[in-house]
Image (cartoon, rainbow, N blue to C red; front, side):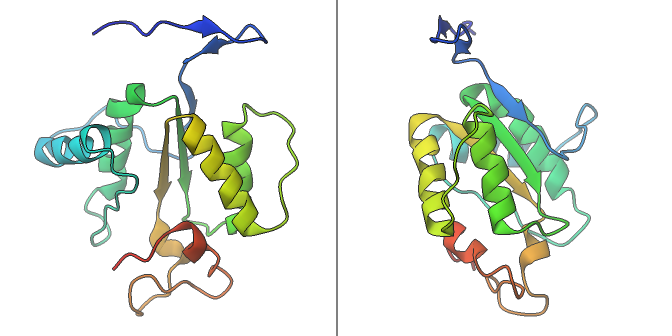
Length: 166
């Protein structure tokens, strides 16, 4: 595999260098099996250029570990990797703020007040830079016992970020 070539930007930093914020992702140094699932997910994301992939199933089957191993395996295909757990149900504004701040190279930026405008700003970063964003434990912001895609009270704004998934 060829080493990527880098150019320096106006601040002297390497352009093209991978930026990573792994948040609360698990350690995947020890990982066995699931090669077929990894290959399928890698093909969908890297070759087929799927913009969103959802991994779902009952708790305890290793979805988070599988996602972490996949992200570690394919991170070189991206300019940045951003991992966040929604287990403690952060507000959409908090999530958007953290993601935009990271993708802006930690520059001080004025975030729009409106969530739709913040999402538009985030999409702007996605258009300029190939980013892998992993949101783990999305079920934490969904209503329990309801149809898929119904958000807990106060988390309905996530419906603007995620298209309905059923």
